[in-house]
Amino acid sequence: MNLVWHRADLRLHDNPALVEALKSGPALGLVVLDPNILQNTSPRRRAWFYQNTAALREAYLRRGSFLLVRVGLPWEVLPQVVSELAANRVYAVRNSTPYARLRDQKVGEALPGRVSWLEGQYIQEPGNIVKPDGGPYTVFTPYSRRWWAAGAPVLLEAPTYFPPTPLPLGLDLGTVPQETPGVPLPPAGEEAAQRALEVFLRDRLTGYHQTRDALGGEGTSRLSCYFTLGVLSPRLAAQRALQIGGEGARKWVNELCWRDFSGDLLYHRPQMMTQAFDPRWNDLPWNDDDELFEAWLQGQTGIPVVDASMRELQATGFLSNRARMVVAQFAVKLALLPWQKCERAFRDLLLDGDNASNLQGWQWAGGLGVDAAPYFRVFNLITQAEAHDPSGTWLKRWVPESGGKPQPYQTPLLDLHLARKRYLAVAEKIAKSEPQGSA
Ligand SMILES: Cc1cc2nc3c(=O)[nH]c(=O)nc-3n(C[C@H](O)[C@H](O)[C@H](O)COP(=O)(O)OP(=O)(O)OC[C@H]3O[C@@H](n4cnc5c(N)ncnc54)[C@H](O)[C@@H]3O)c2cc1C
Image (tube, rainbow, N blue to C red; front, side, top):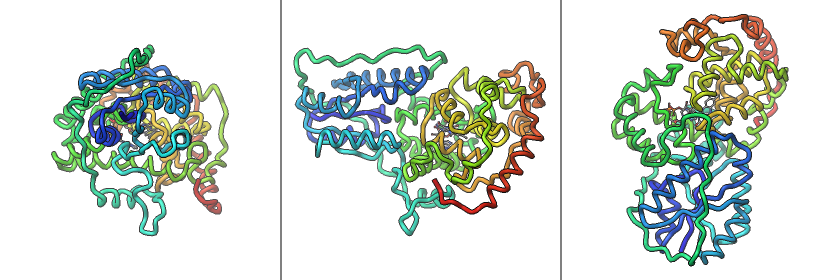
């Protein structure tokens, strides 16, 4: 019997680890509740992970197999489970964050020669798309050209049933914990995710390229929380969209390419976790003002578009890409809040919180050297709201005191005009300084 160790791939469909494991006999699923990850995240994100783990257990049961749940450090738990079940091999879909790579190295050392690592978290695995000279890309457009040219890997079907799995008598399958998320969660599990995908494809894909920038996020798929935990295969999603075709589909799949690009950036530059991609930007005069940080986090700055965004995120765990860019730019370029602290707090609020995409998003929007984003592009927070929420409905919903108007509804905590001038003066000097090599 083989074990399929699920991490950021809480699904049976298009799961190469599962397909490989089943090639040589029965297979059992395993989720390890790793304190290094779970104790370092927020209740809402833990709850979302638990609910999707429970849904995966149901999916195994429906096909005649089981999902084991164990608590502990993976490099200690895996050898115990392998010996308890007399399992032959462990199969897992590769992850590539710095912690995941360290964890997997330790697991590989604890079970020498008995773990198979498969590709399946991304459409193109981090490290696979390289420049003609073999080096990593740092700019999205040339990366995306090669990404599109590479074509998508072949999709794998979910097995309809599992061969009977002989289990030791009295085996404790382990409990999936429950936690109160504090926000309404979307329906969990791969079937719900695939239904949500189909609704998006039917109703919003065609016009996606025109509607995706709405601040309220009504034009996009809202599938990110499924992609982050691998509940939905990005390869399946891309394939379904491209079958429908059109400009909207191409633009949408290009966003999945951004997801892969984010994974690739972090894979090649783990320093991005704490350092600016272009280290010169570490030298911005950061402002460790706790009061300003709290006001930003709670949506109490007095600036409607910033406050609506952060209040929506606090209340729902989701925020549109446009609103994410707005609050990240405000925090980094105008308030000069330490970006690492903001990125961390932001990730904990997002149901789709993901190291690679969040770091890329923060460093891109904050002009810290990711991609070719120009430092001097500083959003006008009034015109952003006018352009992307023209009726003011979204502003009014989250900041009723604004009356749906984008102008400050009270004296803002920051003079936007002065803050912009201050940032541009310093940023210009940094941009003209000698490059120090990227993070
Ligand atoms: C400051 C900031 C922080 C971000 N943090 C995260 C994060 O923690 N997790 C996360 O999944 N995305 C993050 N993003 C990217 C993006 O905002 C979200 O993926 C997107 O808004 C999710 O909504 P959706 O599923 O409706 O996206 P859609 O527009 O429907 O796009 C489809 C999918 O493509 C991927 N995607 C879309 N845009 C991007 C992007 N710019 N970068 C990487 N992947 C993208 C997501 O998986 C998304 O579900 C961040 C962006 C910024 C600017």
